[in-house]
Length: 249
Image (cartoon, rainbow, N blue to C red; front, side):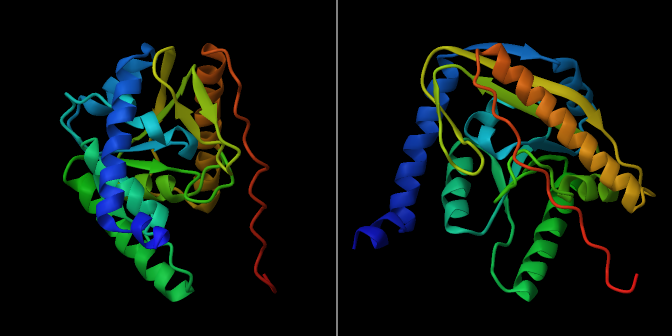
């Protein structure tokens, strides 16, 4: 009975609303240091759609990384998992639109759901949204970038805005992402890095190099933010194993 209650839409809506108000209270009571805002401005002032890349562990206060006066509508890619259902409700409660991806087990369904989500993200960017991706989510490895943001940037021709944050007065969970739960008051640091553009003719090697550069810049921003609030520094997990060449190639 308890499980059916906690998984119900009505219960999740109430809890997600409470959590959203709590995160907004935490954000409002912190003293924020903003670094690299010229990079944010470079992305938003055109009024065109763009892509925002961040780590999964920093999701709870990620809304602080966006200028609400910017013309683009903040939008997030959220998985179709049970956890994703809750995060999607949380996102709506802080005024963020949502594109739902697929986390089904069967390969056929996963590919179909992933293609649909990718088209929805393209459409959102064409409609001048800021499409936010946690580029190590939904399952990691921690702080190791996947190729999704690079592929989306190549197809749309829009920049990737690179963003991280950290706060003092927090709890870091022993989860795969080392999720950061803020408490009220204390200090917060927001850091933007120079945006990335992916050429439309980028080949596989060039895209892999840009994925690694995205990962490097995001980890650089995260380390700087963690150190600025007195730590601890959340370190990346082991790198993704290299892709095996096809047999007979």
